[in-house]
Every structure is written in C-alpha cells, then in structure tokens.
Amino acid sequence: MEMQPKYKNVRVRSKQIMLIELRTLLAFASLLLAFCIFCLVGLSAAAEKEFPDWDQGVYAEINKRHGEEAARRMIDVVQLIKVHLNDPVETQLEEVNEYMNQMTWIADSELWKQPDYWATPFETITTFGGDCEDIAIAKYLVLRLMGVPDEHLGFAHVITSDKEHHMVLLYRASENETALVLDNKDPDIKTAQERPDLLAVYVFRNDGTTFTIKDEGDAKRSVKAKLENKRLEKWLTAKERSRENAESYKPFNGGRPLTPDWLKESK
Image (cartoon, rainbow, N blue to C red; front, top):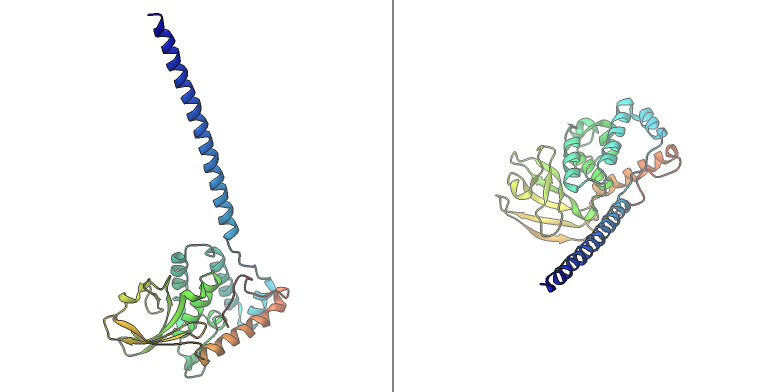
C-alpha cells in the first residue's frame, strides 16, 4: 500500500513531462509555420511585377494626336494592365479577351484605306476599332504587358465556316496542353477542340516560328511543317511601327520607355 502513491507520483510527473514536451513541440511547429509563411509572403511579394506609371504628358500627347476619347481609352487599357498584372493567367486571358472584343470591327479598306493592313496595338486602341488581325495583335501585346510569356502565345490564320479568312490569338500553357482560342467573333475562350468551325491554315509566333497545319475537319489537326524564323512582312512591319510609335512618346514620359524593364520582346 505504501508503494502506490510513489508510482502514482511517477505517472503524474511523466504526464507533466509529456505535456511540457508537447507544448514545446507545438510552439516550435508554430514558429516554423510562421517562418515558412513569412518566407512565402516575402517570395510572393518579391515576384510581383509592377507596371510603370506614365506621365500625364503621354496622355496629353495622345489627346493632341488622336482626341480625348483615345486618351481616355488608353488610360483604361493601362489600368486594365495594372489591375490584373499579377493575377492568374486564366483571369488575364478572360479580362483581355472581354475588353478587346468590345472593339468595333472595321474593315481595313474602310479604316486604313488599304486592302490588308496590320495595325499596331496603339492604333487599334486609339481608334477602338479594327479587323480580326488588329484585335488579335492588341490582345497579344496587352497580355505580354501583363507578363504572359511570349512562347505561350501565337496567332492562327483560319478559315471560318462562312469561308472567311480570319485570325485568332492562341494561348498554350505547355506543349502537352490544348491551345485556348481568343476570338473576337466569340465572347467565350474555348479550346481548339471546341472550335471545329475553324479550319486552321497556319500558326505563327512572335519570333517567326511558323507551323503549317493539316486540318481534316472536326478539329482533327496536325502539323505539316515547322518553319524557323520565317519573315512575315506584315507582322514585322507592324512591330517596327509599334516600336517607332512608342519611341515617339518617350519625350512626354520623362525620357522613360512606356514598357516595363522586365518585358523582353523577341525581335
């Protein structure tokens, strides 16, 4: 009978030690978790991109060259970029597609007095109109300014079910995933398989890589040939005009470029 309290005290002390160790372990785990969260938040903040504010002189010059409505639209586009700069790419695609699809479709012969003119994004935004190529190119640039990698974007020349030649913007997250189609004639972003109405002719990227496509109908498509560094004159001309236009606005932006430093364009 005298031994029972002794063993009982031992058990109590053991429980106390276990409780102390458990509290110590929990405290250490909490500190470790807090440290990990701090590191993740720090990395996330460090990875966030910033789009440089333009001086008011830029918008004043746009107003002077193209009118008050054009300046207001450019402000809207810059805000669109800044608001969604660090959003998931799915959100960026949806927002850009929706905004740009509001543009009025205008034939080149009417707007530019030419049979086939590829406008710069600046031209398309300031006029808030253009044909399919112009709208696709405008979507491309705004997505690039939001940080979407160049290699994930491309343009597809297609023939619609109405036998019209048409251009759409493509986004492809990886080589193993299906391309998404951003089309000014369709408000919804769909996969290429969901667009059997489009007969693909060729696809090209900014760097000149071009794929000729064999399209058997019903979205059964395959690559016939891949051409490296193909010179697409209309695309190259549009890019050169775009660079010249951006340079012309630098004096109104304190000598600073309009595009962010982290944007590296393929020539």
